[in-house]
Length: 263
Image (cartoon, rainbow, N blue to C red; front, side, top):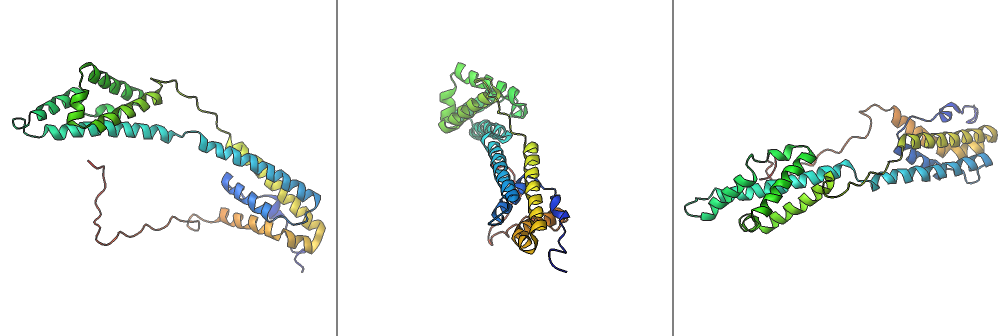
């Protein structure tokens, strides 16, 4: 039996079920494997696939241009660190003997003024946390506490506090109108469009083989091999799929601790 007689077109009429980024990779592979002198149908489907890939990849790029929710968390974390650092600096100074170091008593008084209930306000939702922080910033200005804070805790700590508080105000829309997030492209629609373009191109390759015989099958084989490879990946069990690399062994002489947040 010849290769063309044993050729089964069914697997290439319906593509494997893949995610969008895998479809993008498969699309590029099929364009690279396209026969050098394709018939009109394959040439047209290849051009359609190229156009669709361009559109889909542009939509994917939009995902990276729009700030993610991580930006909010980063601003919140930096603000938490700035307030926590100031509190720890004052607390460290306040631990000194007050009879020997008068500034230690002042540090304790400042800490009680700014953090009467500790750092519990840092666990509030964004808007409420900004409000609590804003009241402390206003209190510092009203009571003229900046000089004492900079002397006892350090100017850098107070500067970082103000920087983070300014960013937090913009985050919650309290000091600047919040920028409306651009509407993200619907990647489900993009996936469907790309799947259709890939299927169309694959069917055109099948038609080329069925009408062109052995030589056409040989020309289409690299494209079919790419599809087969992705079908095998899609059908593989989780244990067969790519697994993360093993963690590196600790360096000799380095003692591992239990982690945690540095003081």
